[in-house]
Image (tube, rainbow, N blue to C red; front, side, top):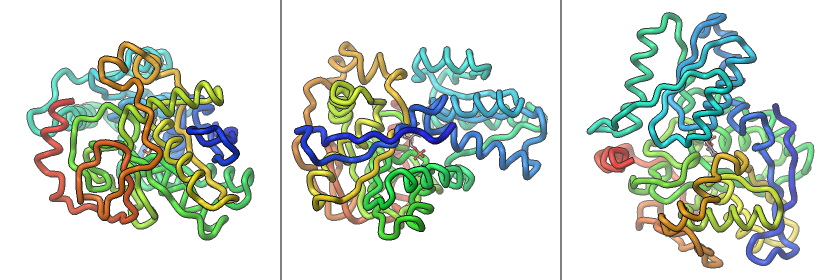
Length: 351
Ligand SMILES: Cc1ncc(COP(=O)(O)O)c(C=O)c1O
């Protein structure tokens, strides 16, 4: 785990001389979340929050599940993952093969939707399984602390980094890499990448197709003050970038990889020559064969031929308008909790 390769990627529109460096976290055994899974479990064991052999329980739709399954194998814990029917069949089979137990909740809650149903099942399991431990990646500071190694690997490979481009879900890797990288490479700017329909940076909650990045809450681990700008990307734009990456570089991944590559490519065109841009690719393409790389799925959801405009729309502040295509905002603040009350529940109920 760790010490993943760094690949030079020419910007996607023209494949010209400008480009960015991609940290290929899909080369970990499971994906980027192997790092926080092993770290959160290791620290919980040290603190005594997780006793030897005790069960681990978590609600996840994928990558963290792979990491926790790995941590369970390494440290000898049974792992139970709570997911919803949206989890891809491939992911289910992999998790089972890696020895995890899966609980799929059958129905969304009328209030709070699938996420609320999953959280309730986790609470049930924690009450029923003696000594069970839930890492809770949205609030656990060890999720952020887990990425010090990744920051050091980037600095060792690239020396100076001027711009770091990260997708944001729990906020863990953007916060953790930037916190350490700014010590090693002072002045590094952090650019966040989210999906349209995600509330993290103050947009209204909508049903989301893209998984991995985005959320319907304001996770405590998001380091709002660290971001110099945020971009929201639409699914068709991410599909275009993923497919282009695959054919141009033989290195691609899922929704978050496409979205990050799109934004990093734009920065490579726009920043002064010589600006060193590092982007984090959280996973590889395998899990997305039936979605991002599936023509039938993409046609059904209108995601084919989604070549993005050369530039994003701009918002003066995050809530100024709803982002429905690639959109950028250079004012980033923690949204007011009230900004996403009932809308979240409505959107989650539809998932
Ligand atoms: C594939 C993928 N990309 C991006 C992210 C977002 O990373 P983070 O939770 O560190 O913000 C996740 C989180 O689960 C993920 O699974």
